[in-house]
Length: 376
Ligand SMILES: *Cc1c(COP(=O)(O)O)cnc(C)c1O
Image 1 (tube, rainbow, N blue to C red):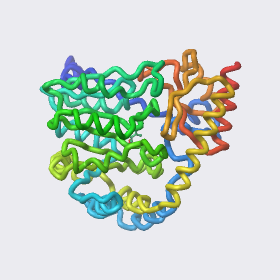
Image 2 (cartoon, rainbow, N blue to C red):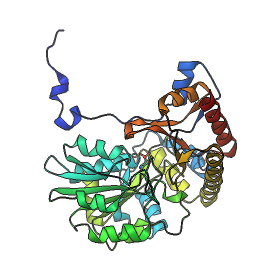
Image 3 (cartoon, rainbow, N blue to C red):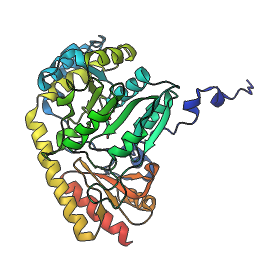
Image 4 (cartoon, rainbow, N blue to C red):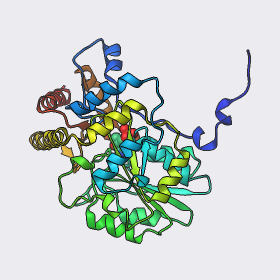
């Protein structure tokens, strides 16, 4: 059948201009392309220790009832999250990954008459979620590369200055991905005090469990003080459940009520609900993950010092290094060494590579591979 209809121009305006999210390269894809095995993926900030044994046991049990729809309200998981953090279940919105939650926020609070503010170098999902609903993107300049404390980091005065009469949402990642940079308690709290009370501030805390700095904020503690605050968290990072897709938002009950109106009824599947609930309480696994990551960061800091590699400040489970030359060929060369890292040219950082912190052995392999491709 012949057709002259242009289905691109039929798509809603925001979607036509959208650049799809570029995920880390899957291991299987590299296996297919190069016919190699023993591939190390340090590209998507996944947990090198895998996932909690308790979560795996819960998954096995949940496998027995796949014929049943999941609990669409996520009652038990929400109750467990609320209990752990001293919140009310009515404040929680579950998502198919926190990505889903970010999308839900955009759908509930933005349309073509609104704008949303985010920072240069911020997590790429924010502009996608904003643009998909036709809202205006307002990007604030980040700190300069030569900033004394937090190069490339979110700049709160610049973010505040971007808020205008039609701004409904501000997205802040703390720490941010792909930079690793972070905002401290006093600065972020002061920012919240200055934001107009009818502007929603989303603080994305995907990596918060890894952070040990005593100056690092816990935005959940501010929910009572700021009814316009939404905090998002995920089971994809330290909890090691990226493959299952589960995350959540914590907010005022009214905001949660609005988010739940646009949430798909069964957006979190039954396996994800069961595993996340079990993982939430596995303190031993969480502690091991924190310790492994802290040691891994030290290993990377030492390697960077030794090799003269300049890196961005980080408190996450990844490190972003300025290679001082185009990073794409280095990325390709690393692939041929069987190591997948993340080029971030799409963020306007074509000379940087973002590398997930692995186990000691994984870090050593990646460091050696990096030295080899740099000297080739
Ligand atoms: C990885 C990440 C997420 C989590 O995404 P999920 O959809 O929960 O897997 C959210 N925000 C940031 C900044 C991230 O880096």
